[in-house]
Image (cartoon, rainbow, N blue to C red; front, side):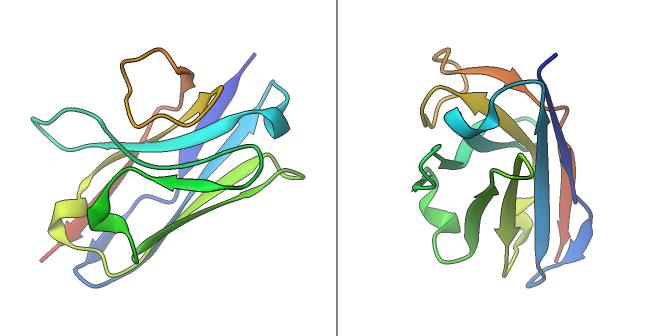
Length: 124
C-alpha cells in the first residue's frame, strides 16, 4: 500500500538547521509530486514547498525562501527538506504528501496520501 514516512524532526535552537526526509513506498514515486506541509498548534495546515516529478520545486511560503530547499532522489523514493536558519515561527508538525501536481492547499483534493508527520521545535 501507499506509504509516506517522515523523519528528521527534532528540537533545535533558533538559527539552527534540520533536514527532514520523506520516504515513499507502494507506488510509482517518479510520476508524483511531493509536497511538504506544516501545522502549528491552533493553526491550519499550510503548504511550504513542493517538488514535481520533473524536479522543479515550488515555494508556497515566502518566509522560507532562501532558508528551505527541497530535493528528491527517485532511485531511493525519497524527498528531502533542508531547513536552515530556523526560527520559532517554523515550529510545527511537518507532513509530506503525494500529489498529482503541486498545490499549496491541503484541502483541494490534490494530495491523496499523507505521512504521519514529524515534529520540529525551534527554541528561541
